[in-house]
Image 1: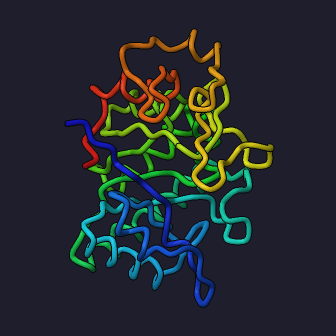
Image 2: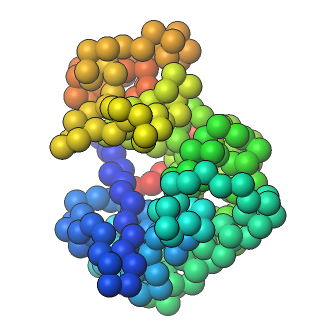
Length: 240
């Protein structure tokens, strides 16, 4: 029977400042991207969140981003490539080490925020970042935004990977995410941002991807963007 890995970002609190109800969310999801202290989180938050994930049987992922606590990692930054790679190594190593101290392990990697968005547009950047992470933990499953430069990078590297779609985000025609600053970029109160789900199919996306007899689980209509995942499932690593 087909299954879906329900994934969420968390571990984003910092010191006395709390963000989100991670404990409640960890009873629902099957994998968690836990902040590594770059864009959010700290050592205590990382430890506590990983322990809760372990106890709930939730897969743990490292979630590195730009070293941008003030901007929550959502600011596009110009950082020398070698420095950026070392910042990814730094964050992934912290994640791997913390998990090991708790008797568990980090299963996957997902880039955060602006860093992820930039990597979805630039295969060379994506490859450099993934190589940096894999130099610390070679067996990580790399979670990518499907049908973008991120996917091109992991296929070029030949590493384990899993494709991701966002139920609550709007997409550009090239399968990248619409910038959060634009109206309608983020769904509210569980609203789907899938064009087909809203009855507005995207013809350029329809032309680009080969549609098969896969259907969107909500709309019961063909969805080119969601099809990206199912059509290429043969290449994905198992996440659950």
